[in-house]
Length: 240
Image (cartoon, rainbow, N blue to C red; front, side):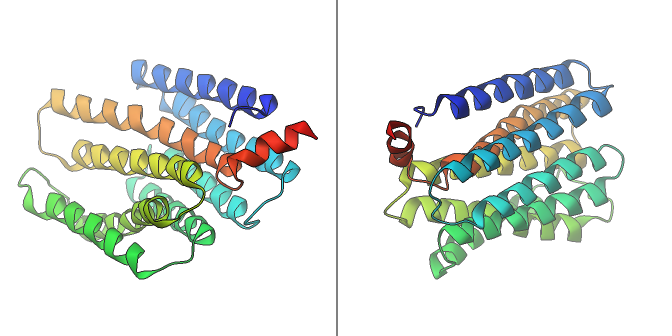
Protein backbone atom coordinates (compact mmCIF):
# COMPACT_ATOMS: atom_id res chain seq x y z
CA UNK A 1 0.00 0.00 0.00
CA UNK A 2 2.88 2.36 0.79
CA UNK A 3 5.34 1.17 -1.88
CA UNK A 4 4.78 4.21 -4.05
CA UNK A 5 6.76 6.75 -2.05
CA UNK A 6 5.64 9.79 -4.03
CA UNK A 7 1.98 9.00 -3.41
CA UNK A 8 2.57 8.20 0.26
CA UNK A 9 4.64 11.35 0.89
CA UNK A 10 2.14 13.55 -0.99
CA UNK A 11 -0.79 12.19 1.03
CA UNK A 12 1.14 12.51 4.29
CA UNK A 13 2.11 16.13 3.63
CA UNK A 14 -1.45 17.03 2.66
CA UNK A 15 -2.82 15.25 5.74
CA UNK A 16 -0.52 17.31 7.97
CA UNK A 17 -1.60 20.54 6.26
CA UNK A 18 -5.30 19.67 6.45
CA UNK A 19 -4.94 18.63 10.09
CA UNK A 20 -3.12 21.89 10.86
CA UNK A 21 -5.95 23.92 9.28
CA UNK A 22 -8.51 21.86 11.19
CA UNK A 23 -6.72 22.56 14.48
CA UNK A 24 -6.48 26.27 13.61
CA UNK A 25 -10.20 26.32 12.86
CA UNK A 26 -10.93 24.68 16.21
CA UNK A 27 -8.84 27.32 17.96
CA UNK A 28 -9.93 30.35 15.90
CA UNK A 29 -13.56 29.80 14.95
CA UNK A 30 -14.01 33.50 14.27
CA UNK A 31 -11.80 33.10 11.17
CA UNK A 32 -13.69 30.47 9.13
CA UNK A 33 -13.03 32.18 5.80
CA UNK A 34 -9.30 31.63 6.30
CA UNK A 35 -8.98 28.22 7.91
CA UNK A 36 -12.18 26.48 6.75
CA UNK A 37 -11.69 27.62 3.16
CA UNK A 38 -8.02 26.62 3.18
CA UNK A 39 -8.72 23.18 4.65
CA UNK A 40 -11.47 22.56 2.11
CA UNK A 41 -9.36 23.64 -0.84
CA UNK A 42 -6.53 21.43 0.43
CA UNK A 43 -8.60 18.24 0.34
CA UNK A 44 -9.64 19.07 -3.23
CA UNK A 45 -5.97 19.57 -4.14
CA UNK A 46 -5.21 16.19 -2.55
CA UNK A 47 -7.95 14.65 -4.67
CA UNK A 48 -6.39 16.20 -7.78
CA UNK A 49 -2.95 14.90 -6.79
CA UNK A 50 -4.27 11.36 -6.42
CA UNK A 51 -6.29 11.83 -9.62
CA UNK A 52 -3.01 12.54 -11.46
CA UNK A 53 -1.15 9.65 -9.82
CA UNK A 54 -3.82 7.12 -10.79
CA UNK A 55 -3.04 7.64 -14.47
CA UNK A 56 0.26 5.83 -13.90
CA UNK A 57 -1.48 2.57 -13.09
CA UNK A 58 -3.97 0.29 -14.77
CA UNK A 59 -7.43 1.36 -13.64
CA UNK A 60 -10.34 -0.98 -13.12
CA UNK A 61 -12.98 1.77 -13.33
CA UNK A 62 -11.86 4.89 -15.15
CA UNK A 63 -14.98 6.93 -14.35
CA UNK A 64 -14.58 6.42 -10.60
CA UNK A 65 -11.97 9.12 -10.14
CA UNK A 66 -14.00 11.74 -12.02
CA UNK A 67 -17.09 11.35 -9.84
CA UNK A 68 -15.02 11.18 -6.64
CA UNK A 69 -13.28 14.42 -7.56
CA UNK A 70 -16.63 16.07 -8.33
CA UNK A 71 -17.88 14.92 -4.92
CA UNK A 72 -14.86 16.55 -3.26
CA UNK A 73 -15.35 19.79 -5.20
CA UNK A 74 -19.00 20.08 -4.18
CA UNK A 75 -18.12 19.21 -0.57
CA UNK A 76 -15.56 22.01 -0.65
CA UNK A 77 -18.10 24.48 -2.07
CA UNK A 78 -20.71 23.34 0.44
CA UNK A 79 -18.27 23.77 3.30
CA UNK A 80 -17.48 27.35 2.30
CA UNK A 81 -21.05 28.41 1.44
CA UNK A 82 -22.31 26.86 4.70
CA UNK A 83 -20.50 29.58 6.63
CA UNK A 84 -23.18 32.13 5.71
CA UNK A 85 -25.92 30.23 3.86
CA UNK A 86 -26.92 26.96 5.52
CA UNK A 87 -29.56 25.86 3.00
CA UNK A 88 -27.39 26.49 -0.06
CA UNK A 89 -24.42 24.85 1.64
CA UNK A 90 -26.53 21.79 2.48
CA UNK A 91 -27.69 21.62 -1.15
CA UNK A 92 -24.10 21.62 -2.41
CA UNK A 93 -23.17 18.92 0.10
CA UNK A 94 -26.14 16.84 -1.03
CA UNK A 95 -25.00 17.09 -4.66
CA UNK A 96 -21.54 16.01 -3.52
CA UNK A 97 -23.02 12.97 -1.78
CA UNK A 98 -24.82 12.03 -4.99
CA UNK A 99 -21.49 12.12 -6.85
CA UNK A 100 -19.89 9.99 -4.13
CA UNK A 101 -22.76 7.50 -4.39
CA UNK A 102 -22.36 7.33 -8.17
CA UNK A 103 -18.62 6.72 -7.82
CA UNK A 104 -19.23 3.87 -5.35
CA UNK A 105 -21.81 2.43 -7.75
CA UNK A 106 -19.18 2.44 -10.50
CA UNK A 107 -17.01 0.19 -8.34
CA UNK A 108 -19.91 -2.20 -7.82
CA UNK A 109 -23.29 -1.99 -9.56
CA UNK A 110 -26.34 -1.03 -7.50
CA UNK A 111 -28.16 -4.02 -6.03
CA UNK A 112 -30.92 -4.81 -3.53
CA UNK A 113 -28.43 -5.17 -0.67
CA UNK A 114 -27.49 -1.52 -1.09
CA UNK A 115 -31.15 -0.57 -0.74
CA UNK A 116 -31.65 -2.62 2.44
CA UNK A 117 -28.56 -1.23 4.17
CA UNK A 118 -29.23 2.35 3.06
CA UNK A 119 -32.86 2.28 4.20
CA UNK A 120 -31.82 0.79 7.54
CA UNK A 121 -29.37 3.67 8.06
CA UNK A 122 -32.01 6.17 6.98
CA UNK A 123 -34.52 4.64 9.42
CA UNK A 124 -32.07 5.19 12.29
CA UNK A 125 -31.40 8.75 11.09
CA UNK A 126 -35.13 9.40 10.84
CA UNK A 127 -35.70 8.19 14.39
CA UNK A 128 -33.02 10.60 15.62
CA UNK A 129 -34.45 13.47 13.56
CA UNK A 130 -38.12 12.95 14.46
CA UNK A 131 -38.15 11.20 17.82
CA UNK A 132 -35.64 13.19 19.86
CA UNK A 133 -37.43 16.17 21.40
CA UNK A 134 -34.37 18.42 21.43
CA UNK A 135 -34.50 19.82 17.89
CA UNK A 136 -35.94 23.01 16.47
CA UNK A 137 -35.72 22.79 12.67
CA UNK A 138 -37.02 26.32 12.06
CA UNK A 139 -39.11 25.19 9.08
CA UNK A 140 -36.23 23.23 7.51
CA UNK A 141 -37.35 19.71 8.49
CA UNK A 142 -38.07 18.62 4.87
CA UNK A 143 -34.55 19.69 3.85
CA UNK A 144 -33.03 17.80 6.77
CA UNK A 145 -34.97 14.61 5.90
CA UNK A 146 -34.04 14.73 2.19
CA UNK A 147 -30.40 15.35 3.08
CA UNK A 148 -30.46 12.45 5.55
CA UNK A 149 -31.85 10.17 2.85
CA UNK A 150 -29.11 11.10 0.39
CA UNK A 151 -26.21 10.67 2.81
CA UNK A 152 -27.74 7.41 4.10
CA UNK A 153 -27.58 6.00 0.58
CA UNK A 154 -23.99 7.17 0.21
CA UNK A 155 -22.95 5.45 3.44
CA UNK A 156 -25.13 2.41 2.74
CA UNK A 157 -23.50 1.85 -0.64
CA UNK A 158 -20.02 2.20 0.87
CA UNK A 159 -20.83 -0.38 3.56
CA UNK A 160 -22.45 -2.72 1.05
CA UNK A 161 -19.39 -2.61 -1.23
CA UNK A 162 -17.09 -3.48 1.67
CA UNK A 163 -19.25 -6.24 3.10
CA UNK A 164 -20.33 -7.99 -0.09
CA UNK A 165 -17.55 -7.46 -2.63
CA UNK A 166 -15.10 -10.36 -2.51
CA UNK A 167 -12.21 -8.39 -3.99
CA UNK A 168 -10.73 -5.00 -3.13
CA UNK A 169 -11.53 -5.37 0.58
CA UNK A 170 -8.90 -2.92 1.82
CA UNK A 171 -9.75 -0.40 -0.88
CA UNK A 172 -13.47 -0.51 -0.04
CA UNK A 173 -12.63 -0.30 3.66
CA UNK A 174 -10.93 3.04 2.95
CA UNK A 175 -14.09 4.34 1.28
CA UNK A 176 -16.34 3.00 4.03
CA UNK A 177 -14.29 4.68 6.76
CA UNK A 178 -14.35 8.02 4.94
CA UNK A 179 -18.09 7.78 4.35
CA UNK A 180 -18.81 6.81 7.96
CA UNK A 181 -16.73 9.71 9.30
CA UNK A 182 -18.63 12.05 6.95
CA UNK A 183 -21.99 10.70 8.16
CA UNK A 184 -21.02 11.08 11.82
CA UNK A 185 -19.73 14.58 11.16
CA UNK A 186 -23.07 15.57 9.66
CA UNK A 187 -24.84 14.00 12.63
CA UNK A 188 -22.83 16.26 14.95
CA UNK A 189 -23.73 19.20 12.68
CA UNK A 190 -27.41 18.32 13.10
CA UNK A 191 -27.12 18.54 16.88
CA UNK A 192 -25.06 21.72 16.68
CA UNK A 193 -27.30 23.64 14.26
CA UNK A 194 -30.75 22.44 15.29
CA UNK A 195 -30.28 21.10 18.81
CA UNK A 196 -31.91 23.04 21.63
CA UNK A 197 -29.08 22.35 24.03
CA UNK A 198 -26.71 24.25 26.29
CA UNK A 199 -23.96 26.46 24.92
CA UNK A 200 -21.35 23.98 26.13
CA UNK A 201 -23.13 21.17 24.27
CA UNK A 202 -23.20 23.28 21.09
CA UNK A 203 -19.46 23.80 21.42
CA UNK A 204 -18.86 20.07 21.89
CA UNK A 205 -20.97 19.13 18.87
CA UNK A 206 -19.28 21.81 16.76
CA UNK A 207 -15.84 20.52 17.73
CA UNK A 208 -16.79 16.91 17.05
CA UNK A 209 -18.14 17.91 13.64
CA UNK A 210 -14.82 19.50 12.68
CA UNK A 211 -12.74 16.71 14.19
CA UNK A 212 -14.61 14.11 12.10
CA UNK A 213 -15.17 16.08 8.90
CA UNK A 214 -11.69 16.89 7.61
CA UNK A 215 -10.25 13.40 8.27
CA UNK A 216 -13.29 12.09 6.37
CA UNK A 217 -12.48 14.27 3.38
CA UNK A 218 -8.81 13.31 3.57
CA UNK A 219 -9.69 9.61 3.49
CA UNK A 220 -12.11 10.07 0.57
CA UNK A 221 -9.57 12.14 -1.36
CA UNK A 222 -6.93 9.45 -0.77
CA UNK A 223 -9.34 6.78 -1.96
CA UNK A 224 -9.13 8.19 -5.50
CA UNK A 225 -5.73 6.53 -5.70
CA UNK A 226 -6.04 3.52 -3.42
CA UNK A 227 -9.60 2.48 -4.21
CA UNK A 228 -9.31 2.37 -7.99
CA UNK A 229 -6.54 -0.24 -8.09
CA UNK A 230 -5.65 -3.45 -6.37
CA UNK A 231 -3.13 -2.53 -3.74
CA UNK A 232 -0.87 -5.30 -4.99
CA UNK A 233 -0.62 -3.48 -8.32
CA UNK A 234 1.26 -0.66 -6.64
CA UNK A 235 4.10 -2.96 -5.74
CA UNK A 236 4.10 -4.52 -9.20
CA UNK A 237 4.22 -1.08 -10.80
CA UNK A 238 7.24 -0.03 -8.77
CA UNK A 239 9.17 -3.14 -9.69
CA UNK A 240 8.95 -2.26 -13.40
